[in-house]
Amino acid sequence: MYTLIDGKAIAAEMRSEIKRGVDGFKAERNREIGLAVVLVGENPASKIYVKNKIKACEEVGIKSYAYYLPENAPQSAVEELVSGLASDDNIDGILVQLPLPAHLDSVKVLSFIPTDKDVDGFSVENIGKLAMGEKCLVACTPNGVMKMLEYYGVELTGKRAVVVGRSNIVGKPMALLLLNANATVTVCHSKTRDLKAECLKAEVLVAAIGKEKFITADMVKEGAVVIDVGMNRDENGKLCGDVDFETVKDKCSYITPVPGGVGPMTITMLMYNTLQSALFRR
Ligand code: GUN
Image (cartoon, rainbow, N blue to C red):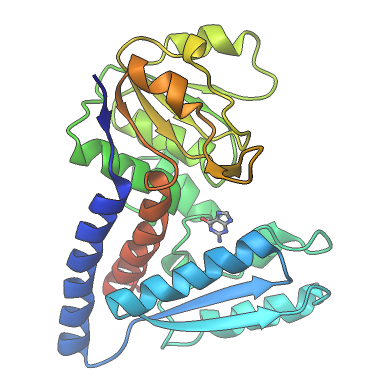
């Protein structure tokens, strides 16, 4: 029998805790906490994410500042906006929604976000600190996964963890966090030889691939903890993850659903990082 990891419930609990932190900050410092959200263009998924991030800000009492630039905005306009926010004392966190339109250099844009306002944890310095096991702002989705595992008391020391996907946003920081938690970590990707054999070794399996129902029951070890980071639509347009939940669930000790698993945690960790940034910003 498997246990369903209820991301929605953990997120709700964390959000009320964060709200208390935000209220305390405001009372003590006599100012708002500000999060700037930058969206360039019309990507429909990005628009929904940004809307949900702004809604979460309202819920915990963080003041959001939304900036919408047109699809054809030149590199210089985006850089100017972000450098203005970098030096604005009312802004504690800056988030540039990715992906940016293809003509823009994302790495260069992100380089204008100061490390201590980098609430996505995407900066070279924050990733570097994470790799060195130092305190830093950590990418929201993988940090949310760690909170879920912690909440359910999943022990990681000495465990075989397999991360499928090597993106800068999820796969790589996820692997670093698991490694810092003393797991034995394997990172798999599209060029991995015999992916099934690698996945079958996983006591903790994190799927961050971006392909609907990619992880099937024959790839999962009996008793595994399965974390599904995917957010896809199935053939009927229904939201689904990277894991074929219906066939995989009975092999698991713990499994996250989609929706209601990792998703609600990602935005919660953004609120958490914004509060951290306000508290500890240099
Ligand atoms: N696009 C997909 N996920 C994310 C995220 O966590 N942060 C930002 N900024 N863009 C994303």
